[in-house]
Amino acid sequence: MPLKGTQPKADHAAGTWWPGLGPALAGLATLLGGQRLGALVWWRVWCHRRHDAAALAALAYSRARSGQPKAALRWQRRCLVQRPQCAQAHFNLGFLLEQLQQDEAAQEAFERATELAPQLDLAWFGLARCLERLGHFEAALQAYQRNAALQPWSPHAHAAMARLQQRLGRPEQAQALIVHLRGFEPRVAAALQRELQAPAPPAGSAERAAAAFPAAPRAAPELA
Image 1 (cartoon, helix red, strand yellow):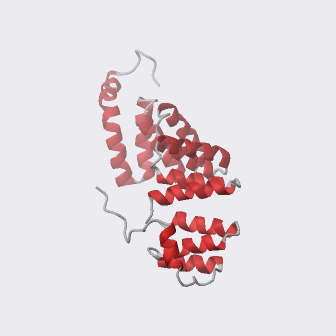
Image 2: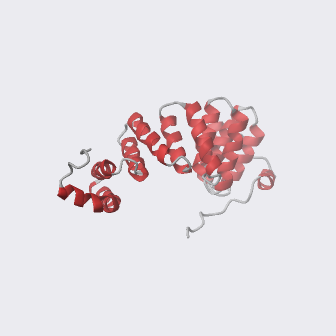
Image 3: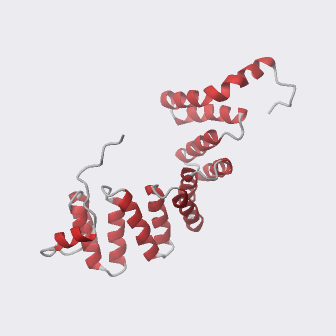
């Protein structure tokens, strides 16, 4: 960074418009030239504004996309210094820590994300995965349930809960989840049934599953 008083007039003039125009240029560069070109433009934004949280987050994302999780983690930690109350920033940190197999630290990051934004469904799913790997199975089930409540048309949490229930020696609960999945993701339900080698559902199981779970919509609602 140039010392104070030594910046050329041209650079000084550019500095007045670059920080405001830089993010737009970075987005356009990413769209037209890909992540690498976009990252170069975000780097220029960061060089002019070292505390720009958007630039820090973008640089962390670009490193993650290029297969550099450790470098991404460094940028994301810098971003969190600027956005300590941003749930998405904590989620991104948890995601990177999870990639680096640091499950305890990832759990803390996901928990913080859910505290700041209880509606952030992906944070609940990330938290559940970490808890499951750490052996906290009941807590993992609760986190999966929170994700499923926020995304009832998504099969991922339901399938994860079914696998975990089967692992815990609760085939009836696993079967109820499979039956519930059949109502909106029949292919996933059939594959899961084969995977878990679960028997065919007995008569009346669909009704019992419907009573245990909220009705699953046939399609995702339209976004406003």
